[in-house]
Image (cartoon, rainbow, N blue to C red; front, side, top):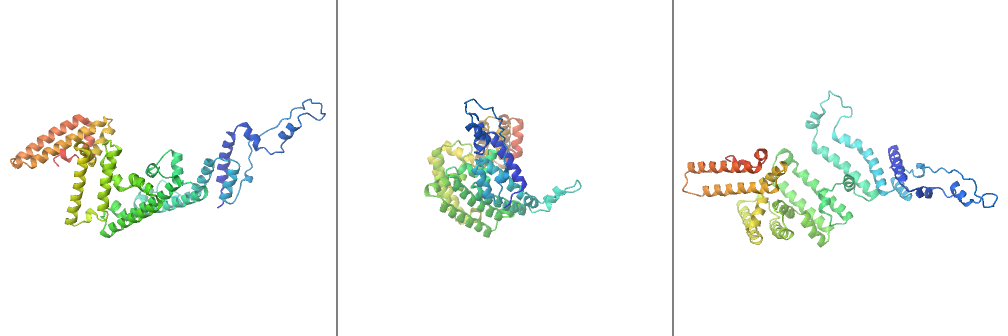
Length: 415
């Protein structure tokens, strides 16, 4: 791979900035061994040998650097020469990544479909929205990203994704959850996960973008992909690492974290719920609740209820109620409303208790044979009005209206 002028200019600038930060002795160390400065020091006594100091000589030390000493037609040689003069690894990475970005920018531009000669009379936004298949655009962009990543890993031994996040001071989903692995293994595992994520997305595109339900064949393909992914993961990790991976990355662990939202769960409580969820998921791994017949669906539901009965016994009634609360997306939305309008954290929990109490009253009314349909409806409306008044008082007018728009507020609106 050949260098462009850009990499030389960028590299020269980066190197000179770095060199200027060196202490003064660093400049002397870079001077050629036969320089006038060194000769003058050795001949300090002067020509007549009488010990009188010779007239001082003016020596100019500059930051001039001749890039012809480093130029190479091969990136590897170029990198090694930069290293040989002590150029910091971070600077080397910046130079190479920046040049690679420039070289591959035209391909990303072409993938986006944006006009190179945009004029004010062009309807580019409409064209991009209607005349481009976004799935194809993303596929081409991923291809370019993979190529960049492979080149940088081969040349510098670093993961481009992780390097870009480091420069931004960021950590993504994978980095935060795979810190139990050394960096090299983390990169290897990340590639496996990203590859299967992309394959799964290819199957789910119709469901996500076109609203078309997955067929039985497509659901079977998803199950097969997950089995293959798990087999590859198991092959990469030791038994201890697989255990940690399960706690951090498995679907069972993610389900527990979602269900315990707002519970401020302890490690011990998490492990209790996780083991129960993992056993349930393993038991029904080959089944898909949406594709089960009535008999299988009933067995699945019975097993789930048994799991929750066991959890209630282990957690206690109060903590189990908080666990069930976390499974209601409406509680998440109440929490979002409280955060948006800067309300105390406890407000969302108090508001949810209003909803829970209303649902219990409604269930009691529905089961009361002594109430006529008219009486039941009148009583329900009265409870709804009182619940709405209480919710408005807890949340305030703005947060209450926000919840009505964004939450599952049908229980307050006759639904």
